[in-house]
Length: 276
Image (cartoon, rainbow, N blue to C red):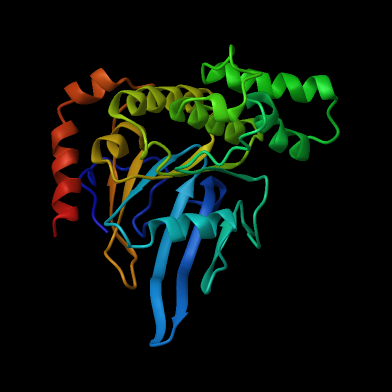
């Protein structure tokens, strides 16, 4: 796998493409996913290898149907692994767990519950020994961070799509996961709301520094948010095709990214990959 910034070695990166074990948060080894069909097995992913470091933000891009969401659902423990293994801090995952928070494209809220109640669903499960007041404080803190301090008691069904996704972001961060998984969380939103939520997400992430893996079809979004952009080959038998290091300093703003000398070089690299 080549990178456009190969001459600028990422901290901890070594020539065989692996990171020191004490830096690795998420490790995918020889990952494989097979679905049986009447015409035989359909291999979605095969021989997929990827290491993601602690406090790293990685975006995943690739053509529709290449298996990006399948891979993310396997990391989340929502989809069984056909071969290989996935580990978080060296421990193999065997199903869903509070060490992985997920933000879906659709917020998946309980429509009859308030914003606060939706966030508390996860908080109550993850922090059973905390007092009710402490759990409420956690939920309210993250709702405030996403700009919903005036919507604690509004039912999810009364919120706009953008506000619902803000609740989804608050819910994921509130359980204090080791890994944050995002499956095109802004894909259903208009461009203005999308930009606002990108800024909200990265603002919280800059403070929390949770390892994050995000699927997106938006090249500009991938560059703006990521430390590395991982490019997947087209399926079937999809795997990692290329990895691009994004050498923008953090914290970063949209203005500084767009004005950076390397921005259009990164963008061209990603588009060229997707077009071939």
